[in-house]
Length: 260
Image 1: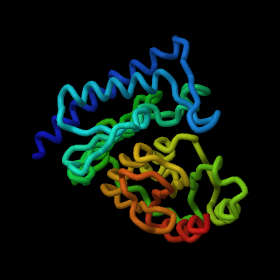
Image 2 (image 1 turned 180 degrees about the vertical axis):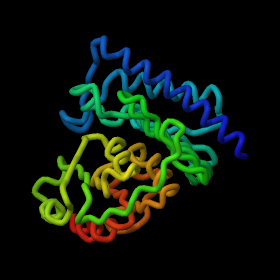
Image 3 (image 1 turned 120 degrees about the horizontal axis):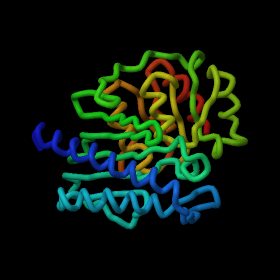
């Protein structure tokens, strides 16, 4: 697709995000239907499903040949012809959405032939849209963001998914080596803090494609490091462990998480 068509897709996504945000905020006055998935802390609500259905309808209406992979409809299969692929997490941080009505976001990414073209992290409660456009840059509400400063692990705040790190020796070592540890319980929000330079890095041992596909595009535009814990490349269509980090902290962080 040419540049103008990417801009057309971008304009559509911004409009869809605004509509989805209204749906989510309006839901606070409603009774949520909450289900569990893998365990009692892994939640999904009727709003997650409604928002994903909304994006699916919009994409199918405007781009009927495009493929869609969403967290709440993982039965959808991405075939070998990956000319146009969308990956969606309708509410990243569902537990926060349920328990706090804060610190959750919408994650959307668009890929062409396995190349990330557009990525979005929408902090719903702050009404902040972070987006990345290939070869154009990263923006917050249309204000272009600079690459984050290089922060060493020793001086930086690092976010890790502490739920799955309890009892791991690497967590104790990371707590000693980093300036301090943080965790929002929402990978998109944690990633925003790396993108804006508030955190040196974010690492999680469990993530689906929808948890990181957008951030990979941000990282490329900002010169951030992304990899699996063993240093190998991250595939946007696969789940598993991954880190996003500024260059100054990356090698020291990887030396620790490799032992997870």
